[in-house]
Image (cartoon, helix red, strand yellow):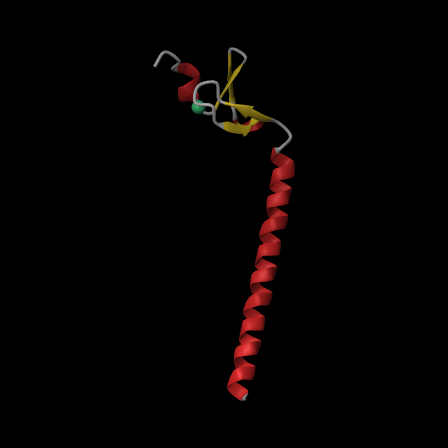
Length: 74
Ligand SMILES: [Zn+2]
């Protein structure tokens, strides 16, 4: 009987820890999402989406990196 009780308590502990962990992950993701959803732009060359603050602006076009901004003929 003691063994079963131990297993139940162990499962409950694992469940509680996992629940707490996933709640933390979700809340931090929500914060990031609300922060990042302000201004999303698309790289003019490869089409990747990124926050406007992380992008590079060349000739009024947004780029994900300096290489895509300067090297447009390839
Ligand atoms: Zn790009």
